Structures are given as C-alpha cells and as structure tokens.
Length: 204
Image (cartoon, rainbow, N blue to C red; front, side, top):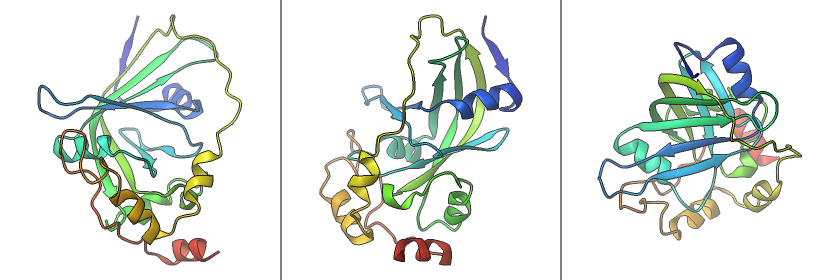
C-alpha cells in the first residue's frame, strides 16, 4: 500500500539520496506534444535543498526537452526505484525551473553539490524542483540489479570543451535551442560561468 508524505526527510530522504540513478518525466501542454523521460546518474549531481525543494545538475547532452517543458509549464515528476534491498518506488510530483548560468542564484546552487565536479560535464543549468505531491509505492516488479560504478564517458567527452566550444556544440544540435515540439529550450549563446572559485577550477 502506497503512502503520501508531507516532506522529503528521514527514511524517505535517505532512500532517495542512496540511489545511484533516478528518472525525470515532463511534457508540454499541447495534447499532441512529446512526453519526455530521462535517466540521471552522475554521482553527487542530486541534492535535497530542504524538505520541499530538490535539485539536480543538468549536464551537456543532445536534447533539452526537460528544460523546454519546465520553461513552458513547470510540471515535472522525479522517480527513484530500489534495485537492491526492500522493493520501493518513490515519486515526487512538483513544479520545476531551470536556473541558468547567468542567474544570480546559479553559483550558490552549484555549491550545494560538493560531491561532484561539474566542470568536466559541461554544466548547463541547475534544475530546482518544488515538491507538491510526495508518495511511494511497492516495487515488487522491479528487478534486482547491482550498481558497479559510474561511467566515465560523459566527463571524458565534455572535459575537452571550453565555454566557446561547448556553446558551438549546442548550437549545431537540432533540439537544444528548441525542443522536439518547437518550444524554447536552452538559451544560446551559452553564458560563461562567473565567480572566483569556478574560474580557478576552470583554469586548472
């Protein structure tokens, strides 16, 4: 029997933070729009800001569907599954927003992710989610699977890019500036990151 929660805390928060992968789902308002579902899995790239606010780092990729949907309507669902231990599925339904690199809040938010260096991954935005409905359910049909390690391919691929080349990479992709349904996606040109700590990391 599933249960609804008022806040992400205690056992629920511990479960969420222990999972090596989670999923995001979003959609445009149009009835014939494309529903998007994405896996997220770089260790340290998710955090609970407070019991009703969650956030994750949005890294370089060939699409920007989630960003586009959040810019249009804000709806998002996050989901975690237990692939080890007791069978559990947790979903957080809420409203999200992409905080981009030129937003005054950006660097303070990035500092909330001390467990990951975002520079090699081509950080595009921080996705902040305000929880509205928090619930769990049984995961009886979810298989047992063992986590071995993160792949290093993403960091290897995008660590070669600086701001200019990363912006050029995004500009030549069909569904970065706009979504598959033509909604505004990642704003381009990509603004540089600012702040002394970040500048030092990029220079090294």
